[in-house]
Length: 606
Image (cartoon, rainbow, N blue to C red; front, side, top):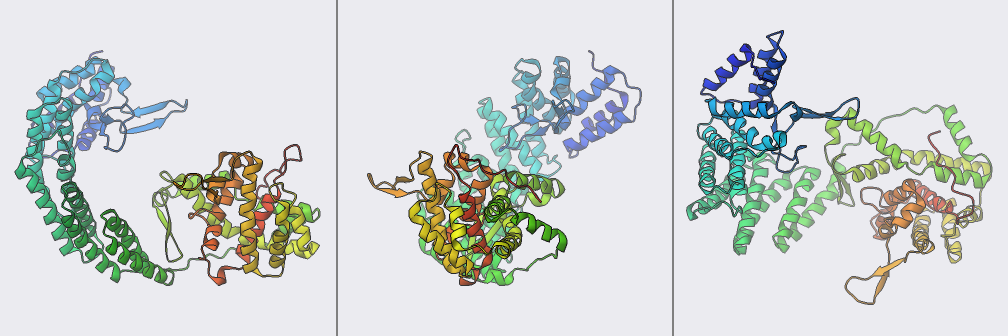
């Protein structure tokens, strides 16, 4: 079908062709679309002409760390799903054919503006094979490279970072066709652009020169250029250290310069210079952190600690580690407590507690055990809803400060789904602790259970060995007497022993080799056990994840590890902790041998 361009679109396009000013592809696309919208009654051929004109400026370059839906450099502006479930693209390459490609080829030769010339030539080179199945003529790669270089040299880009994108693309094109002359052309243009736009405090304007050229074996550098690269980084580091009165842009730029310099000096064997540049950066961070609020200081000292360790600066790392712990002790005092009052209907609460404890002591223990296991699927659904309502906040990583240090970093919902799940489950455990406590209180009011009664229920599980009964009974007795220190310290090891015994019952060994010592073995820890596929299949997702979150994951409560390593202060050995320990013990009491009655169905919200 023939391509016809409406007069209104042609007029706008010709104006862009003849201009000698910076252009932005998005503005070009919008202006062409707006001009087409102003001319009603277009024929099918004219609609096709509008698409052929606008589409090249709607395509977006694919960032280096991502993959295009088409496996090409350019990707669609947007991707969606139609009512029939079929993926849709905008622009959609199915609207293009050989006539459209020929039209882009003609435009690459006729337009006078290098921004437009580069885009037409590049979409021909990049997308022709996808559209027609035929490889394009290499002259279009040549045209795109030269137009990108001209755009950068004449500063016709809309933003300085766009000039960097253009030259990076030009370099990759030249390398892909093994064109040595054009590789050097782009290389020299990159140095020129650096001299024109580099600003130490503007991260996007200077590091590209080092990142794109330094380790690229396909780009020859003169000794003068190599020296310039390193001297420019040294200058950036010095300038940024001098300007870093606060933890702002210069602070981050100083790290990026120091990191690249350390990489260079390590590569060339100049370890003294590695320590010099990293030490200069580190002293700046330590000085600023000393004046910052504890949590902010910890956030900057922790990466510095790893930087020092990576550069084998042991004494500096030790000093920063001690400084981080000192800030960690101050952190709780600097945090604001956020609370919200929630009113409960007394009658509804009473009805809930009555339902939880009816049917006799064994039924009540069973019901409590099932109800207070956190649901992984319900938590995921809640996170999805929060992600839809508050998409920005769901992108922000969070850190957990406990025991005077960062104990866990939880990434965004998209990058760290398990971390988000465990952190939310841990929060839900805290919220529901009061209802668990009230359920246990109502159970005791109603049945006045003795330690023997609860122990009998727990020991129905084949995972509880008979020689553990006495310890379990002592721990439960301590709980009933309000001795939370004894309850927790006695029962947590019994829980771990029962889970390891479950491995044996499932036919898996409860031990593993010890490091590199051939012939020596050690018992598996809780993380090993709860991540065992056989155990996970036996317990079901809700229970094994709940046990992991409460007992052994730093993103959750991590109760077993914190107690075992002496990290829990005396005041934290209280009802909420011992209630949960008792509850975990009850959940293990639900385990039965095959052919016996199955586990009760998981209770939903009541």
